Length: 513
Image 1: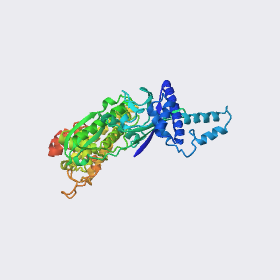
Image 2 (image 1 turned 30 degrees about the vertical axis):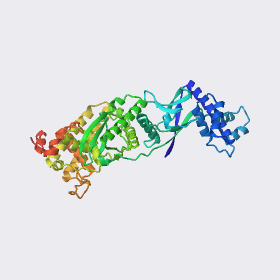
Image 3 (image 1 turned 45 degrees about the vertical axis):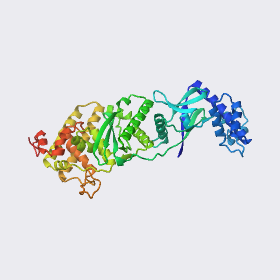
Image 4 (image 1 turned 120 degrees about the vertical axis):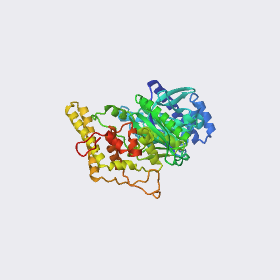
C-alpha cells in the first residue's frame, strides 16, 4: 500500500535562499523535460540535453525532473502555473492592484517552486532529500544543493493521533537506520503562500506476523509513580517466567524532540526483548489517561503525567513490533493493577507493577482471574468487615478534623478528594456487610480457559474493587502500598487469627485481641 503524507519545513534565511534557487532551477528543468518529451525525445536524449542546460544541477535532480515531467500529458497543452490562474492573471492588467500582485506571486510559486527527488534503496532511501536526526533527536530534512553540499531544514509535523501513518513512517525510518535495510521514499517540496511544504510517498510493508501469542507474551504495564514500564514474560500456560523494569524518569526533563528520540529507542528495546524471548507483546488498550486537575493537591504527580504521554510510547512499541512481524495484543486495563496487587504480588513476592503486567499478559492469553478462596472467606466474615468499616470511620474522622484546620485551598482539595474516597470505600463495605454474600461473577478458574474443566465461579470486576477497599487500607494502612507481602498469610494460609491479633479492639461488634 502506497501512502502519501504532508509536512512543513523551517529554514534559516541563507538556507532558504539556497533552497528557493534550487527549486527555481529544477522547476525550469521540469518544463524543459516536458517540451523534449512532446518532441518525442528518448529518456537518455532528454537527460543529456538537461545536463547541458543545467550543468550545476546535481544529476539525480535531473532524473527526478524527467520523472516529474512524465506525469503531465503530452497530448494536451499544459500550463505549469495552472490554466485558471494564468487566465485570471491575463485578465487583471492593473499592475498596481493588490489582487494582481497576489495572483502574480501565486503564479510564480507554482511555476518556480517545485523540488522533487525520487528515492531508492541504494541511496539509503533518498540521496538528495533525506530524513535524518541530529544529536538532540530532532527530525531534519537534509537537502543536497550541489555535489557534496547540504543544507538542513527542520521538519514540522506532529502525528494527529495514534493511527496517523506518520507514526508508521517514523517507525520505518528507525527500523531502517537500525537494520541498514533501507526503503525508498520520494520527497517533493512545494512553495505555497511563502511557506515550504513537503510531500513524502512510500510503500507501507505488510510483514507476516511470525511471532504470536502461541509462544506466550511479553506484557507491558505503564506506571507513573515511579515513572517506568514493568515487563512480565508469561508462558503460554499462564506462568510468570521472568520480569524487568525500564525506567522512564530520566526522560522527564528532556525536550520534546529528545523525548521522542528516546521513546523510539525504548520501543526498539522492548521489541528486541520480545524477539529474544520468542514472545508476542501484550499491552493496555489505553483510551484516555487521567492526568488529574488543577487544584487537586497532587501537583507533582499531575506535572509528571502532563509531561508524559503513555499512549505515544505504546503506539511506538506497537508500530515497531508490527514492522518486525511481532503480534501485539491490546487488552482492557480495567482492574489489572488491583488484581495484580491483591493476588500475585503477595503470592509470588513481586512488585505490584510487575504483578499488574503479569495480569495483562494472562488476560491477553485468554485467562480469567478467580478470587482466591481465602479472600472470599474473610470477605464473608462479619467480624472482619466490622473492623474494616471501623478503620475507614476512624480515617474519616481524622480527615474531617484535618480539613477544619487546613487553610490552604489546594491542600483542602487534596484532603477532600481523599475524604470522598474513604467515604465511598466505607459505603461499599457497609453494603457488603448487609448482604454477606459472595459477589457474583462471570469468569472461569484462574488457570483455565475452558468452562468444562472443573466448572466456574462467578466473579464480577466490581468484586475486585470490594476486595481492594476491604484489605489494602484496613490491613496495610495504605490505599495501594508497594509492599504487599503482609497479605500472603491471608491469601495462601487463610490465617485469619494472625490478622485479628494485629487489629485494635472495638467497643461495639468489633474484633478483640
